[in-house]
Each structure stands twice: as C-alpha cells, then as structure tokens.
Length: 324
Image (cartoon, rainbow, N blue to C red):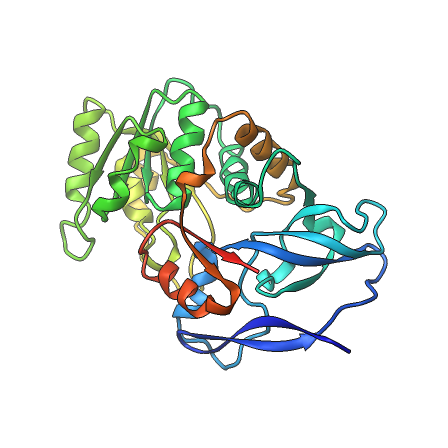
C-alpha cells in the first residue's frame, strides 16, 4: 500500500511530516479528498504552541480549512473529481489526503480559485456568529482583535449596515489595516497587564460614541489572550457581547458584576452546521464584498509546515497558506 504525508505535532512547537497509509475505499457517506490548499486558523495554533499532556498528537492535527478534489467516493452528494472545501471533524486535516464524511464538505464555486475559496470557511464562521444577534443596522460596534477574524468581522459588519465599526488591537500593524477591511475607526490599545488594563480603550470608545459606548462588542482576540472583561467595559447599558470562538479549557478571570449592572446580553457562536454559511460566504466573495487576497500574507509548501506554523504562531502576518 502506498503512503501519503501527514503532519504530526511531536513536541511543543515541533511539527513533522510522517507517512500514513493511502486511503482507497471510503465507507458509505464518505469520500477521499486529495488536499491542494490549506489555510491555518488561530484555533490550530494552541495544539502547536501550548504544552499538551502527551506527545505525539494525532496525525493531521491541526488544520480544518482545506480545498481539495475528491479522488474516491461512496457518497451520493459528491463524485470523483469534484472540487470541495473540506472541514474535517476534530481538525485532523493537515495531510495530503483526507478520509472525510460528506457532511463536512461543501462544493466550491467554479469561479473561485483555491486561495479565494478557502477564505470562505473563516468568513462563514463570522457570518454564522453574526446570525446569533439581531441586525446591526445603524449600530456602533467595537471589534476587539484585528487579526484575520477581526478583519472579517469589520467587513461583514460594514456590509450589514453598522453605523460605526471600531477596530481595536494591541498591534499597530493590524490596526493599520482595519479601515481597509471596513472599519470606520481603529486604534491601538495598550497591552493588558496592569490595573488600568484597557482603560485607554474605554476612553477612546467613549469619545467615539459620545459617551454612550458600543451597542455591540465582538470579542475576537483569541483564547490565549481573551478579553471578555474589556468587552464588557466597552459595551453600553443593555448592550450585547458576541464572544467568538472557543475559550480556553482552564477557568478565565471574569467579572460578572458589570454584566448584571449593565443588563448585558452575551452571545456565543459555535454553529450546528457551517455549510449554509460557507455558501453565503462564497457568493459574497464572488460578488466582490471581500478580496480574500488581502488577507493572505504568507504561503508555504507542505514540506515547510514547521515554518508555516511558526509564522502564524508569531503573528508575523495574517492568513498563512499551505500548498500541498
């Protein structure tokens, strides 16, 4: 049996290529996908950068934004040769070949190239998250975190009719691009490591909103440096918080009093099924609502997966592409 390459995290900060058996005969409802283009996400990095209970980790962990072609099918929905976006369960998609259920696939719009199409996955997570809150037409929205997801929030919020989109980050390079993606205002806030943590952000949002504060605050910082307390401080009375993504496993410091005193509503964003939002994202990209190329700053061949993960971990740019 021939072998295919897969990535495996073998130690903290170390990812290597290993050989796995070639998949030949998928079970009913499954297909084999030959990966062509992958895109790293912030949720992939903790497996690489944080100490894990034991090593090595499962092969393929972690990647879940992948464009490829079906090479074998036992599915009624997809046939050999179909071009698909694959979102493998358990994030185990960092491999040349995937055995995957057809409920984790979306057909790709033929008008989109691979790098354009792969951005439909993170954009879909943003659209799904925004669907959990009432419409934002005419509202002031603050977006904490201006990485790839925060920038996608800027774009989607601007398209949805938000009156003001305020981009906030600790990195000047990211804030410098906020308005390019739809923010009306953007500023750098200080590192959050003192008793006055975030005070400058509160002051700036108060200034921009005439003292009212934000109607909606999106927390898109990422679980390693989550800012739920600051998000609460930026929200107006009876405002809404959208906590994007998954929090860390360990408890996080969270002050409940401001939530109660302000009568805030907190929304979370894990979808039951992302596929409908991927289709919406593809249509939006095709119609020019977003230029995905602006998000992609680095490209690496699969053989350089170590450097790709290091680049994303170090926040040297925005989206990092793996080319299989």
